[in-house]
Image (cartoon, rainbow, N blue to C red; front, side, top):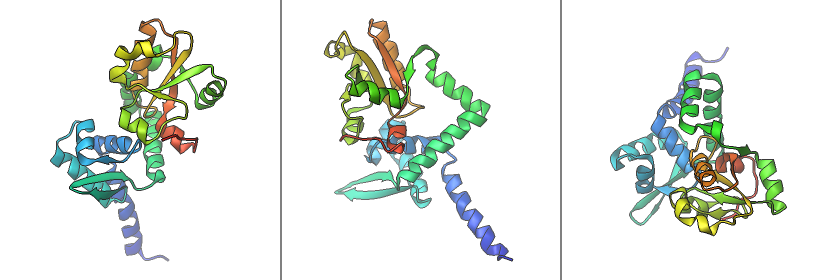
Length: 218
């Protein structure tokens, strides 16, 4: 028989990782870091947190081995410890959305995707290769610069309304953003269709694109 003390320590160590994931804000930070490495200041602003609170959340994630750091001068930059952390976050998110009614309802209330058309990754690749659509990355510009779908153009959501003239009138536009739970692409499609453009969204986003090991341009 195994040592019960060692067994208890094993499962307690696993639980410490689970505990680190037991915060909505820490999950949001992982969602942001799945796009690109970021400074504490940038993460705090993007997640709507004070610097002290953001740093505390990041330290919890670091102690659990989920994120890593590097220093550049006075700034500290955080990144996911590995692609398996992004996969863990995606699985947690999808399991919650499938098996937890409260999480599913919250997702639907946030995204409101019943009014926006979606296409999957295979169709996007096929139609991009055939020149049948224009892919528009509506994430913030630094996330596009860190990695994007080859051939996609960058128009952040908060600039889209002012830059409609840059988009061709006779080509369907497919917007994409961070992932399946990111609202940017939904809002972009609503804006584009309200201005008479043919538009759809990628059914998921850059997180799932990377996890599928598809080509990424930077």
